[in-house]
Image (cartoon, rainbow, N blue to C red; front, top):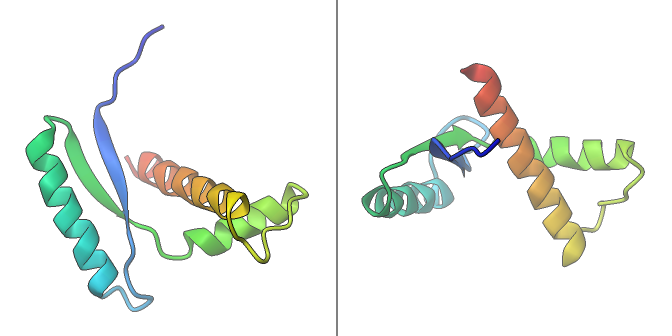
Length: 92
Protein backbone atom coordinates (compact mmCIF):
# COMPACT_ATOMS: atom_id res chain seq x y z
CA UNK A 1 0.00 0.00 0.00
CA UNK A 2 1.46 3.34 -1.07
CA UNK A 3 1.10 6.32 1.24
CA UNK A 4 1.84 9.98 0.79
CA UNK A 5 2.89 12.56 3.32
CA UNK A 6 0.09 14.79 4.55
CA UNK A 7 2.26 17.23 6.45
CA UNK A 8 5.62 18.03 7.96
CA UNK A 9 6.19 18.12 11.72
CA UNK A 10 9.17 20.17 12.89
CA UNK A 11 10.45 20.08 16.47
CA UNK A 12 10.29 23.48 18.16
CA UNK A 13 13.02 23.96 20.78
CA UNK A 14 11.17 25.96 23.42
CA UNK A 15 12.79 26.98 26.69
CA UNK A 16 11.72 25.00 29.75
CA UNK A 17 9.37 27.85 30.70
CA UNK A 18 7.73 27.65 27.25
CA UNK A 19 9.25 30.83 25.85
CA UNK A 20 10.89 31.07 22.44
CA UNK A 21 14.59 31.79 22.38
CA UNK A 22 16.97 32.20 19.44
CA UNK A 23 16.82 28.52 18.41
CA UNK A 24 13.00 28.53 18.30
CA UNK A 25 13.03 31.73 16.25
CA UNK A 26 15.39 30.06 13.74
CA UNK A 27 13.02 27.09 13.50
CA UNK A 28 10.06 29.40 12.91
CA UNK A 29 11.97 31.20 10.15
CA UNK A 30 12.90 27.84 8.58
CA UNK A 31 9.24 26.76 8.70
CA UNK A 32 8.14 30.00 7.04
CA UNK A 33 10.54 29.32 4.16
CA UNK A 34 9.44 25.67 4.02
CA UNK A 35 5.76 26.67 3.76
CA UNK A 36 6.63 28.69 0.65
CA UNK A 37 8.22 25.61 -0.96
CA UNK A 38 5.51 23.00 -0.31
CA UNK A 39 1.76 22.57 -0.35
CA UNK A 40 1.99 20.30 2.69
CA UNK A 41 1.03 21.68 6.07
CA UNK A 42 4.06 22.54 8.21
CA UNK A 43 3.48 22.22 11.95
CA UNK A 44 5.88 23.01 14.77
CA UNK A 45 5.74 20.75 17.81
CA UNK A 46 7.20 21.26 21.27
CA UNK A 47 10.37 19.20 21.56
CA UNK A 48 11.15 19.95 25.20
CA UNK A 49 12.51 16.94 27.08
CA UNK A 50 12.60 14.68 23.99
CA UNK A 51 16.38 14.31 24.16
CA UNK A 52 16.13 13.24 27.80
CA UNK A 53 13.41 10.74 26.87
CA UNK A 54 15.48 9.49 23.91
CA UNK A 55 18.51 8.91 26.18
CA UNK A 56 16.30 6.93 28.56
CA UNK A 57 14.78 4.81 25.79
CA UNK A 58 18.18 4.06 24.28
CA UNK A 59 19.55 3.04 27.69
CA UNK A 60 16.55 0.73 28.20
CA UNK A 61 17.31 -0.82 24.79
CA UNK A 62 20.87 -1.57 25.91
CA UNK A 63 22.53 1.35 24.16
CA UNK A 64 24.78 3.77 26.02
CA UNK A 65 24.20 7.28 24.67
CA UNK A 66 25.77 9.11 27.62
CA UNK A 67 28.58 10.92 25.78
CA UNK A 68 26.91 11.21 22.40
CA UNK A 69 29.10 12.26 19.51
CA UNK A 70 29.00 11.38 15.82
CA UNK A 71 26.86 8.34 15.01
CA UNK A 72 25.65 8.08 18.63
CA UNK A 73 24.36 11.63 18.41
CA UNK A 74 22.49 10.65 15.25
CA UNK A 75 20.76 7.83 17.14
CA UNK A 76 19.65 10.25 19.85
CA UNK A 77 18.42 12.75 17.26
CA UNK A 78 16.52 10.01 15.40
CA UNK A 79 14.93 8.76 18.62
CA UNK A 80 14.01 12.34 19.57
CA UNK A 81 12.41 12.89 16.15
CA UNK A 82 10.38 9.69 16.56
CA UNK A 83 9.20 10.88 19.99
CA UNK A 84 8.18 14.27 18.57
CA UNK A 85 6.25 12.66 15.71
CA UNK A 86 4.59 10.13 18.01
CA UNK A 87 3.55 12.88 20.42
CA UNK A 88 2.08 14.89 17.54
CA UNK A 89 0.22 11.89 16.15
CA UNK A 90 -1.15 10.91 19.57
CA UNK A 91 -2.54 14.42 20.02
CA UNK A 92 -4.62 14.24 16.83
